[in-house]
Image 1 (cartoon, rainbow, N blue to C red):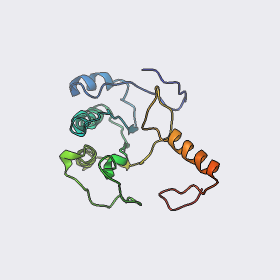
Image 2: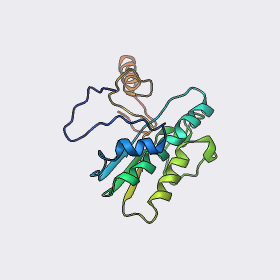
Image 3: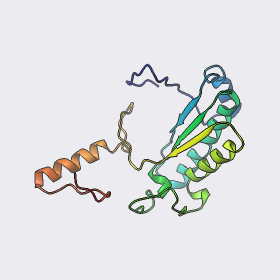
Length: 176
């Protein structure tokens, strides 16, 4: 995989999180020996929700399981989940989602829940810390077209509002 993003502070490493963890450990061993901070945001899209959960359920467990074996100086893991945590793919999520809101479905219906549980379990008693972030929308660059990148949708919405001479209202109850 190639990305058209260049930042000398960041090293992009392509790894297959769907394969056996033992292979992942071999691939990561040398590269991750001095890693202090890790950011995980992998996702496999499937139109069928049962397939979506199955495809994504093991990704983070494989990655984190391998990471803690090969990163002896690890200080922090950041897990990026997303709007699906609030089940926005199934129904309108509550406006003003809060981290302390209860889970709305069982863990086997939402792969983000086991991800978070596994992270907390593995961190328990460890020296490293973790953060979980849940952006509902993601704006950024991708290596190919991506319907989950909301930049184009937001831009079209703002342009239509401007053309119609109406205020652009957002779910945050703020005017832009």
